[in-house]
Length: 334
Image (cartoon, rainbow, N blue to C red; front, side, top):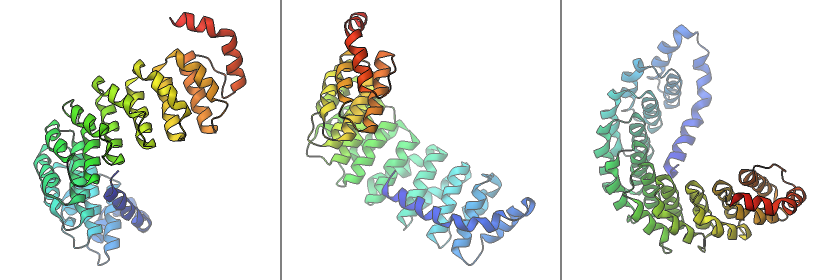
């Protein structure tokens, strides 16, 4: 979730307290009273009325909500945008497009997100324009929305955004490319992942995107990233390799069981369980002695995936079983 989206969610959530008086009305009178409150002098009341109307997601409220898009208060405009996005009424598309250039970053982000949720292709060109011509946060919002929209035509502008001056925009563009399901961005994303001068959050997003796209070309670069100086990148690469479940990653992931960072170790453990390489059994059992509670749980789950046995988090039980069954287990696995 982007920085702007988190702020918007907080602001909208803040006014939820005001919903209680509205929902106390008899059901048959609720709609009329809520519509009346859309004209209240208090913007907090207007916003809360919109929040209450969202519960029904009834398209009969589309026109009043579109009218609320021109409210002088950004909180009211933002709430109306959220409501229209949830309703998915195509009548809201053009008014929402108009708000992509709103003076408030909160409003423009919400408009971009709502357009993506509605899924109307008319939003594509305005979002691309926002991505190429907006300020830092508008570009970030547009990249996120283009990912949600899922139009493969967005690949080229998003690839271009990987070179944006803002690392926030580059990171969001990388994440969005993973949502498109198009292998065209694979090489540019590998380039980002492998660039040790790039910001870690951008490289992290590139690893995530590569795992989403699933092109095997990414496996070797991700394996190389397991040795990166940044624990975030090592952990992200391990997580991405879990999605590929490629046996080439087994030995490099086994080495990560001794990584000093828990996040990296946990992801390596999970990936080894998914890959299912029998060579990981003994190192995983050994790791049970030193791991913390979360790590032991992850190891026990990975061992169950590989061996189809269940001895919980007990190092002693797993060790005893392995001493007796190692040869037969490995022979049967050949």
